[in-house]
Image (cartoon, rainbow, N blue to C red; front, side, top):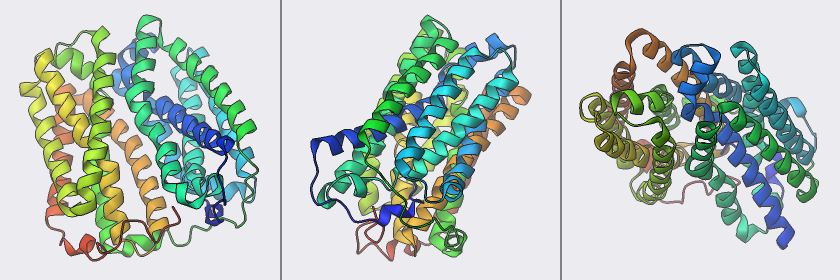
Length: 410
């Protein structure tokens, strides 16, 4: 998603070999595992809280910590490593991911478990910061869009397959087994990255000076604020979706993993639907998303009190939220004067908002309960909709004559 690695400016290859596509697949697999690791505690929250004798609100820090760390790692890690070959960096981050996952599976202390989540946050931010610019260095120019789509299909695959599969594994064994399995798979991907990626030297040092300047662009500033409100609201409530489904919706614990699978599938469909709509009507698409999310979460405490109705509302929630990334990305790319810097800033805002959402949601759950966190999320969605509604449509329409991102090196 983010493209901080200025080495991505290197010309694309003249031809693409089969091995090059396997290199793309290895990067996609890395993204898949990292997103799965970041969100896996959502499906196992009740079990984690019980096993480690902490409240569900406190257990939500398992999402907060890596989200906040990833937000800062995304812009800062590429700067810190300077000209280090990106093949070494990606392989090293995946090795660190394997170590952190295995250590997490062994921890009996919640504090030490959170320490392993710090390491995972570093891996998430650093890997994404580099992966966003690799397609043009792995495949021929005309195949770069396809390679980019394949790399970031790992995000959708993690939601549709990774998190539900990890939740199922945790249900039939325990959460430690799920964490250890992530560690084992990370070793496999680490080996794949080492053997499949070519040498990827950084040709220029990464510079961050232009990032803050993009917030002075009205469209980017509004997009960043809307992103923060929507993502904080979503993860504030979705972090606790397992106890919400069980206690409010009457869903059996064993059915939660299947519902999360359906949630992910709905999100994947929503991504393609919103992508099509946002390409033509970005303003309307971005406005509708928080409105529908608000209606869904505000209605949940009253309408989602049976397994069937809870499932229907969850599917609508997933369908709509699945379109948020592509819609806001289109908004940003149509508004920005420097699309690459604006995209990097959005990556920071998105990841930080994930962490803050889980943290604030945990506070609300502990103080007021599960229904309250759904109402709080709905309030944030309403605020985002109002912010967009009072924003003139011209802030995203002035560049609609060109395809989103054509000035970016993606």
